[in-house]
Amino acid sequence: MRKRYIAIFILALVVLGLRTENAVAQQDAQYTQYMYNTLSINPAYAGSRGGVSILGLHRSQWVGLDGAPRTQTISIHSPVGESRRVGLGLNIVNDEIFITNETYIDIDFSYTIPTSDRGKLAFGLKGGVHLLDVNYSETNPFQNGDALATDQANIDNRFSPQVGVGLFYYTDKYYLGLSAPNLLRTEHFDDSDNSNNQNTTFLARERVNYYLTSGYVFDITQDFKFKPAGLVKLVSGAPLQVDITANALLYDKLTLGLAYRWSAALSGLVGFQVTDGLMLGFAYDRDTTDLDQFNDGSYEVFLRFEIFKNPKRLLSPRFF
Image (cartoon, rainbow, N blue to C red; front, top):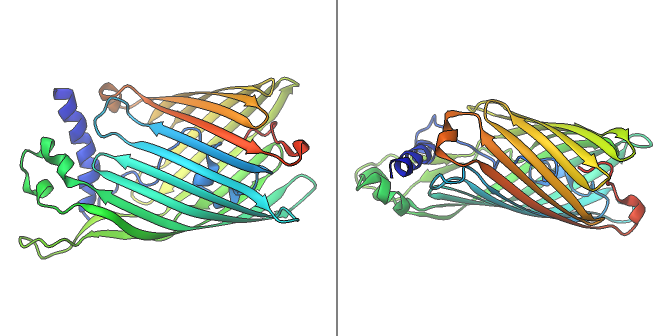
């Protein structure tokens, strides 16, 4: 029982801390297998796989911690038109943490310019909506009648627009991406009628998240390819996030990897290319902070299904 209350207290500080003007919590959803889920953070990725690409991903963070984050992502994207330079995508993310539930629905557009025989540079634009739900009644077991938690009206589907941009340069063996999935600094206000306090307070504040991603594929042998990858995430008021990943692709079928999130977690990754168009992946994270004693780690699973009109366009050596 003590572990339960400690866990809820940690999560309450994350969520209720958003009420103060200077407080900042985790913004965009976090992914360990970001190299396969790039559309969620960079609209310029749309169409880069060369065919119709559909991905579903689930992440459970801090398993065993009451109210811990859970994220589900569904995306589809493809090049369109005769030139295949235009890419279109749809990305839906549902992110739950403690008493909050956020849904992002985005349309992605990209335009690709060949820069050499192998290199391509894509420009991306993202537009969509963000829906925020907050259920204050779920704080009752923790707050024991605390008016701060129980006197608030629930927030249902509070709407805000989303606009993002991105750049994505890639070849068959290398990629470099720079993006900001949402440029709008939306403030969600608690404007419910509260006779005890006439001042409107912040419920949450969206901050701009900047992403830098990169990866390279080394052909060690015909059946063994090594791919280091990295992600840097910058958001004002929060610590810099750096992810470093090393993946090995064996026989163009089995992917094994290790990852380190700077001062946060160690991860193991595994993926299997079931067919040319179907891939399954799994990742497990273990915290390297004091939070590790209150949870059983985090895990991700994903499934990617792809349709290629021309089998020769299959980009299996890239595996990103």
